[in-house]
Every structure is written in structure tokens, then in C-alpha cells.
Length: 116
Length: 113
Image 1 (cartoon, each protein chain N blue to C red):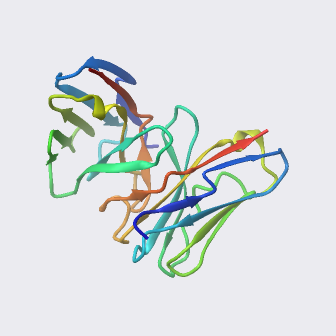
Image 2: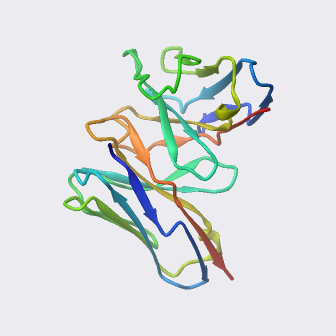
């Protein structure tokens, strides 16, 4: 596609429910990243996928968070038993695959998650 | 632990002014850095990437420099326009991290006609 696509753009859920967020990266981009942005704060790294390598999950805040990626395509971020502190914008980014620090990242518009 | 500070947190200026946005890292061993722009309700757009072999990058009215010895970067915006209004974020590698970026909280810029 022309850019990174994320869905849904907005999600309101009740505390304790599970949510699934989707990211479609730019075609041909082997690297995919998930970040979280709380109101008024910078972005917080969650997880990184590179091709068929094992993902870097070091940023996931708890075992309620998990993510998957099928090959070099779609990724889903799942949050189980949501808590109010999970409310944030969840941003997905992709890049060609040389590493986040050496190449431009292309971001989606994000999913605004609100946990009531 | 690497931390990023952006100064000022917010800036409001009349159109036409030249602006300087600052970014600093607690761990000064920064070998590359990116500046992003974020518009309300949208994702981030990469503006400039200063790679390990570079000291600065220019794109149109934007110029970013990186002092690797001090871990400080400056984004210079010349002849600011209302369309420049957005939040500007800098990001650099986590200490020892190759694929993780640590972001500042951003500078919210408003340029008035």
C-alpha cells in the first residue's frame, strides 16, 4: 500500500476486555515496530519484528501484551484484560529493514485506545 | 538509562521567524538521530535523519545538526510558516540498541499568521 495502515483508528473498551489492534506495513518493508504514546509524552517502544527473526519483545510492559506478525505483512497487537493505564495511542511503523536507527521510519496514524 | 529532553516544550511565534528547537540525550554516545513531525490525530512523519557519518542534514527550510560529543541536536526552521505548526520530536538509539528509538516528549510549535 501507499503507507502504513492501522485499524481501528479509535477503540473504546471496558476494563477487563481484550482488544486487538492491526497494522498493515508498507509493502516490501521487512521491519515493523509498535510504539505507545501516552498523552503529552514521547513514544515508548513496545516490540520490533525483522523478517523471520525472533521479535524483540523487550518493550512490552506486561504479559497482557502480545504481538504477532505473519511473514513480512500484517501485524496484530493484542492487549488482554485491559486496564485504564493502557489508554494511549498505539502507533505502528515500518522500514526497509536496516535498523530503526539508520533509516527512516514510516508511521501509521495510530489507534487511539480508551479503556473505561 | 538513556533519556531525551526537548526544549522548549511549547513555542508560539509569529509567521516569518527563524526558530531553534533543542534536543539532548543523557547518554552522549549518540551516533545518529532523527527528527519527526506529528500533526494532531496523525502519526509521525520523518523529517531528517542524521546518520553516523554525518553531522547535519538539510531539507528545504529545515536544518538539523548533531553534536555527538555532547549528545545534543538542534533543529533550525527558517522563515516559519503557519503550516509548520505541529509537534516536533527527536529520537535517537537506546544505549546499546540498534533497532529501538527513544523519543523526546516533543516541542509543540504554533506559528501565527
